[in-house]
Image (tube, rainbow, N blue to C red; front, side, top):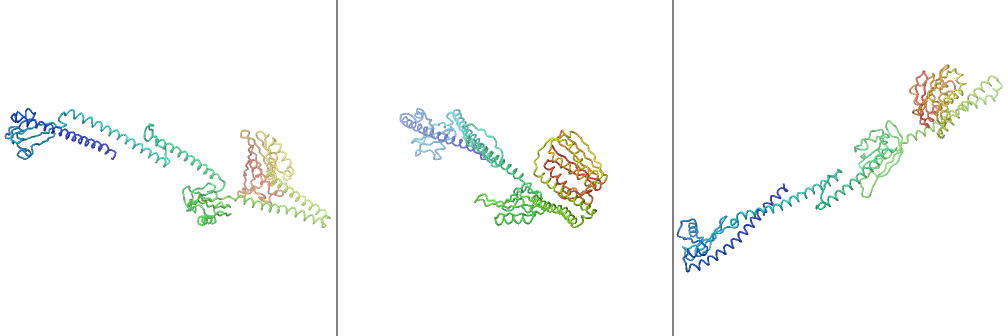
Length: 549
């Protein structure tokens, strides 16, 4: 509204100025006309000495009016002026103005003789010229007003656009395009604004890139990360933290207590928030996972002026480490127990023989057979332990082998045990049996699976060995299936644990060392292979192995 009033006021002012100028010019003209009239009345007075009043007036260029008469309009006007006191010998000059004329009166010492002269006012002298001058004036002044109004309007529009662009920059939005000529007053300002916008966009792009990289880095860290503000609200977290706490952590800002259910960890965070002290502790998390973690709660201060501190919570998963520790302790205990049994038997029966039992041929043969069996069991146990150690240390040096030939050699090596229990072994081969793989590891896997099928089979049972080589995908798959005692579903997840036996009393021989399937599993891990079991109680077991070459 103010912008529209500006031109209107400017036009009104120009009209007022024109009127004032016209009035001033008319006043100046009036003074000139008055001086002329005065000079003419002086001539009139001189001429009247030798002429009549009417003749003197005519010679002087004036109009003589008889004040006693009222026949004409002029005579009536003079009569009215005299009787109203406007014109008298004491005030012998009088000027009467209308819009178009200026009439001057003079009365001499005689009340009967009045001379009059009518002059045109400024705008009446030449109306067309006056109108033309007025039009030129208004066109000129209004053009100036319009020019400056448009200029101001454009300047205001450009300033609004620049202001809006700065606002858009502040709100992280793209700037609108502003194109100005180099001679424009705002050209430098707009150019600087554009450069500032480009600089800010570059800074924001870099900041967003650094933020994405940081979040990506934190997101892929194997440790749990959670960032809290001074009010204990979660600002950021990664997937590892969600997995460790076993909760789905919201991305919205919320109190940490909604996610942390373990009292020990919650207490560490609360103490750090109140006392500004770092804490480090190993604890077990409450939840479905029951994980062991090393927890670090760290107070972050970015600067002395930064009073809004942040708390960083780091959780290192120690579950596998503690599991390995337990496995090592269990392994030592199991090895000690497994070694103790055959050593005790060998020692006890040897002592019995030395104490005189050797003199009894029947006892001598019986005890020597027991000593031989326990020695064999001890040898197999030591061999399996050495195999485990070799699997963990051996490198994966591949060589070309004939899988069919190696499998047949393993069957031949176990032929005595197979014949002893009247087992029927069947083999099937598909694809090219020549493969490139670590020979020792391949034989170790096949040997233990076949030995397991022999040990846990039934009398007159069957063993089926199938081998296939997929040369397109460059991988092998083989299976070992027996008709033995089978494995119940609840125990199938534990059969690859070290020293775990399904049923010692049902094995055909010693029940094995309890390390065979553990050796198979760990060997396959070094080859990036996989093994799965299909079994039902009393219906036999099938192990399926898949190995990429």
